[in-house]
Image 1: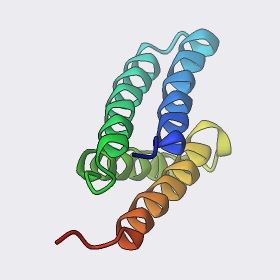
Image 2: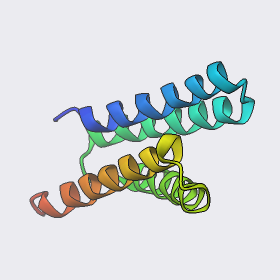
Image 3: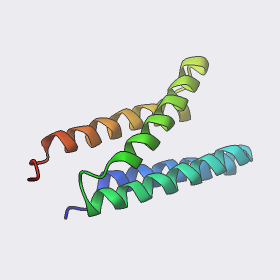
Image 4: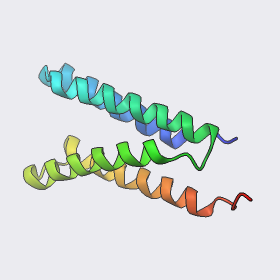
Length: 107
């Protein structure tokens, strides 16, 4: 079973972004959202590492986070942090879906 390294890196980036938002701006919502989404994404990466076809949680969390951050980027025009997380979310979503499509069929 291959380890979902990209999934773990994405989860760590989201969690670290929440911590950075708290450190720089004393933003408790950034801290909470970063840690919650980072934890959910980390668990999703664990699930994907155990079974590469088990991407439901990862897809849901990535889609919600990407949508929220994409909306924030659209309204603010600021690349950091909203635009960057939206871009990372798109990359993670493409990776998750392509991994499912490229998996050999189980009989």
